[in-house]
Length: 437
Ligand code: UGA
Image (cartoon, rainbow, N blue to C red; front, top):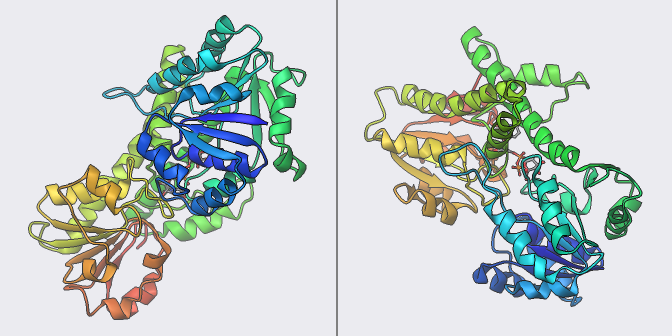
């Protein structure tokens, strides 16, 4: 099939490459010329494991191209909307400017029987509104919503082998003409047994925000337990292991630590609350306010714990922060808890050096006032305290015996509860976890 993908960020670039891998003719379109140049040269404009190999692989087939010219979408019959929906400045609601602009710019290039497929995360009701915009322009075209559930750091495999597909169509029926089109688009993963559900438009939109809200709630639940464990002298990691063995609960997303960040969970729960308010259902989601508050409290807690760890205040203390990305295997620093903690410590008088295998350039653009070092060992030299805030494998594997001689004082705060506390203590470190004795 011939498809266009509007928006080539973390979602669209991966989607375009994966659709070409599945055998389709794809044009990825973005206004950002630099991104288009990089992608056209087979280079990923951001770090995502497996993406660069995939780009080179599919570009060799001639099935994938990138352009900044929206008229290139004219040859396609399926158009994916993959642009961002960030949080509005000063408000909780989602900013839909990019989605609206993408659909409007696409209109002149839509023909009868084309399908516009929304993948961006949008407030419920957006799809129905945009469907009207599309059919007012071309009555024989369709707009459907097909939310994306990929995780950064696993985006390629999540796109090629998703847990499920959700198709939101106007009448919610299997007989809707777009269902067969999406089925043939996703024929390969469907043939591997990927479940797919057809729903009406608002249900499909809500599936996405409900899923992210559930994940955020799970993380904040275990972080609330971490607060309790700290007060009671208990260990949240053992508690998570034990409750996680109940398969109704499950151990995944029960990793207590500095909390969730990134371009999705924080802004999605806020946009969800804002939308619920508009719909007169705000009471249903007041718990998400608490989920958000627990999450933000983690960051202040770590600043306080670092102060305690340093003994006599933060002023002039050299602190090394391991990790800037909001999670490992990503260079994304949007709402990164690690960076927000680093910036807070610096504001309170500490001298903070941040290191990260992939995210330093992005971090330095956001927080130029912090010091950065690409080399882990030199970042750690003479540190008064070490904070592990993003659990990259190379930080989990650090040798406490060796590092003991590099730092000025062997104090470590394990913000993700991933280090072997006994091993670090045995090597002479003062170890602090979160929610652990
Ligand atoms: C999230 C969802 O997991 C995806 O399903 C969804 O498609 C995506 O948002 C989106 O809406 O586009 P992502 O933001 O890539 O994916 O990252 P997650 O793996 O969900 O992690 C989010 C944050 O939670 C990270 O900061 C991570 O460190 C933190 N986290 C995760 C914890 O603190 N504890 C955990 O147990 C798990």
